[in-house]
Image (tube, rainbow, N blue to C red; front, side, top):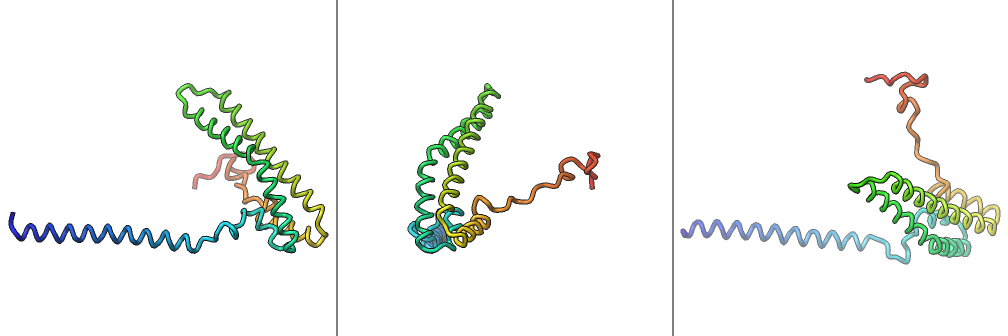
Length: 174
């Protein structure tokens, strides 16, 4: 081979290697920065339910979190069963021998487990709220409405968008 071809191949190889090293180092730095900005597990909230108690006194906040952790531990098997049933229903949809009864049964079991999870969680919230002063109960209610299970639902699709117009005529195609 000619020396010029070898030099070009060497430079191209060097550039490609530098690009790969840059990508790897950049990815590692970005991952490190994301981990550094992420709160540790001791300060990370349990989610919306935990954040709902932010306005309570420290003692009541601690009691609320202990109550919620206990309930979440108790309902975890039900939540896992519900997820398992939903996965089973999804697999039944894809099966070559589609069985509508099996899909319906799996979804019904999942729905019942979801309802039981919600019932237990709401019962625990009610029982805990009964121990609070009226002012603290008001603050907890505001927190639950802001980001917890009592938050306002997202806007629904207007009936006209689904059925056309209020009188049932087809929607305008424009």
